[in-house]
Image 1: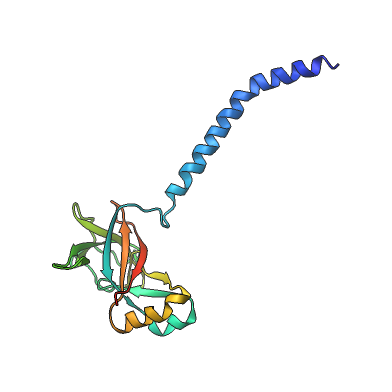
Image 2: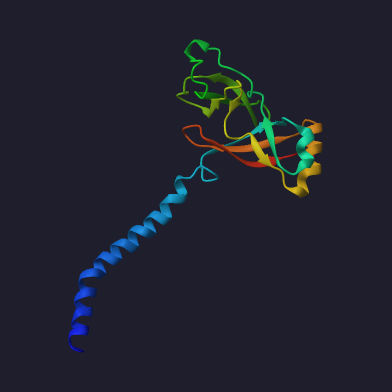
Length: 178
C-alpha cells in the first residue's frame, strides 16, 4: 500500500498542477485589475481647479460631510427641448474653460449633448433640479475646519478635480489660499 500512495500523489500532482497554476494566475490577474475599475480615486486624467462654496456653512462644525456648490450647480442647459422631464437622472455635461491670467477654470456652457472636444465634466440632474457631478460631497479633516470656515467666509475656497475622457470626475484636494 505504501508503494501506491506515492504513485497516486505523482499522478495527482502531474494532472492537477497545470490547473492550479492557471487558477493562481487568473486570481492574481483579477486581483490586479479589479481595483482599477472602481470609481473612487482611481480616475486618471486632466486636473483642473474650480472655485467652490459650501452649501451649508453652518454645518462645518458638525464634523460630518459638507456639500460643495459650484457656479454651474443650478444651471440648466439652454437646449431644454432635448430634456425629458419624466427622466430626472439624465446625463448633463459642463464644458470647462480656463480663466484668463489664472490657473482656475469656470463653466463655459451646460448642455445635454456630450462635447466632442475640450474639457468637460459629466453629471446628472436630480429630481430637485440640481446638477450633481460627483464632486459635491467632502469630509473636512478636523485640523482644517477653522481654515475651511475662513476660506468659505472670505470666498477663497477652491478644489482640484480630476476627470477622465468620458467626463467622470473626482475631487482630489482642497485649495485654500491665504
